[in-house]
Length: 108
Image (tube, one colour):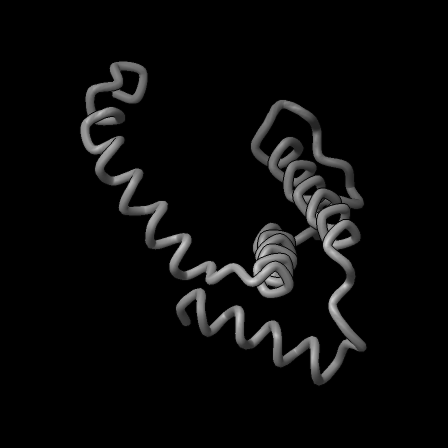
């Protein structure tokens, strides 16, 4: 599925199961909350913090999908064609950073 179709699927879901989109500020707060949940899993599972027993069953993929869902909501409600924006960003990064990371001695 491409980003454009994902945006449409989220919009369809909102229309079928939700009453409406939460406002942009609420969605921004929700995005922050979801990113925090991802950060907690990463910090405890892959970082130096010990993982609490209650966190061991958390699904990182599910939490990342929550982040994506809210990002798609924000794009939809602000009129952003995220596929177009992503393609533009990837092109920019490809041109700007073509040799940057390959020449980074820290990555070897």
